[in-house]
Length: 93
View 1 (cartoon, rainbow, N blue to C red):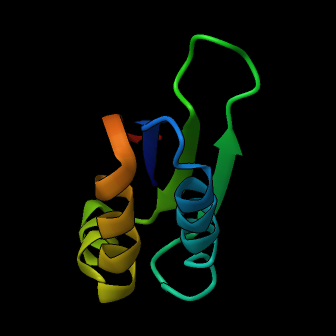
View 2: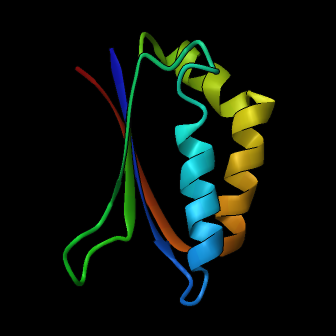
C-alpha cells in the first residue's frame, strides 16, 4: 500500500477558495476508484501548515492514475492558484 501525504500553506484572505478546495478534495473519495482511504484535515495549531491530505492507494500506478484523473486535476488547479507552499511524501507501508 502507498500512503500519499500532502500539506499546504495557503494565501491569506483566501478562506472561501480554501474551503472550496478542501470540499472538492473530500469529494474525490468514493468517486475516483483508486483512492482506498482518505483523510483531509485542517491545522488547529499556530505556526504549521494549513491543511493536510493523507490518502492510500494499492500501488504507485494507482497513485499516478489518481493524479492524472481529470477530476483530481480540476481540484489541483484550484489549489495551485491559492497555495504558497506544498510538501508531499509517498511511502510504502
